[in-house]
Length: 387
Ligand code: T4K
Image (spheres, rainbow, N blue to C red):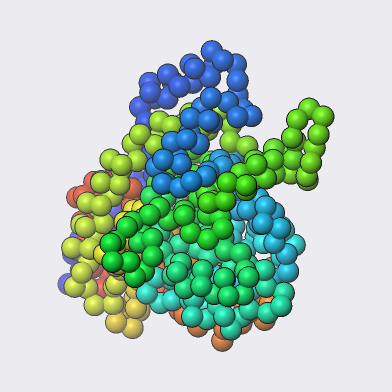
């Protein structure tokens, strides 16, 4: 029989931004006011770039005003053209940056276990027009970076990772090492992009970054994000305005101090969800390999409607009645957008796993200030839907 559960008094969203005490942020703002320096590589920006490099354990970083412009600039900096193989199971920004670079996205299917691009299928999609692979560490699940690099090396392709969900993820530096060494996820491929949007674990309200190993890329990327201006007398390439301003950087610096504690809180929330939902037929969640350090960006469930009795969409709508606002990341698939559905790689036959995932996956409320008792109640609401 259905239990009577009252809706939450206030809406429970999929996430809430991590915010420092206002007094702490104000102290940073006072520094900015004192200097009267608001953007263009100020002291907050320089300090944040250094801090991010350290936190992500990557050799080079360039900050941006958002993740999308960062990804667009990454494509420019590697001079990509023609076709780029990517995933349809991602946020709109991923294929859109290709279009904005006059590149055609070629959609490749995904792995059921991680929802990341299926590295085993990439090779069959390569043509003479292919210049790169743009893969996404979806929900912080790492792609098969070793296999992707092997294919890229064999065909002379560039590799860009969309790490929007993977701030702080660490994985083994190589799959078969005797001594296991963990490295930051931003060390793989040619360039990795991080998003610092308000909905992300670490954020600057809006912001982003590129990380890369090639020190020579740093000058080029920094020129590209500043209109290509080298000095007062020389503009050396057609750049864009991708700069992170001092207020965003200041917010980033104070939020970064809170990230480790936030991840610990999210770990407890994840454990509570997993404990409450572990034996529910038709509900599953993603288990990271024990060698992976989780970013704790999202907690996502998968609903098998035949077994659970309700579809993902029914669950999503039912939750709303209780003031719980889950999100259908990522529905619709990018291959279903009007601007991409005419591509031959967008056909459902080419993307069977992605099409199933888009109908089954639901992002649950997940943020450090979410009380554990609320997590338990959210799970009770879900279980109660079956009756
Ligand atoms: N690649 C991938 C794989 C990405 O996921 C993203 C961004 C990008 C690239 C591009 O990076 P950026 O250019 O954004 O840096 C959100 C974010 O806007 C977007 O950044 C993110 N992915 C995407 C997955 O989620 P929406 O449309 O779901 O956001 P919105 O405004 O509905 O927010 C979701 C919930 O968060 C709200 O219901 C309440 C809460 N919220 C949101 C904001 C903005 C707050 O509590 N406070 C806030 O300030 O896209």
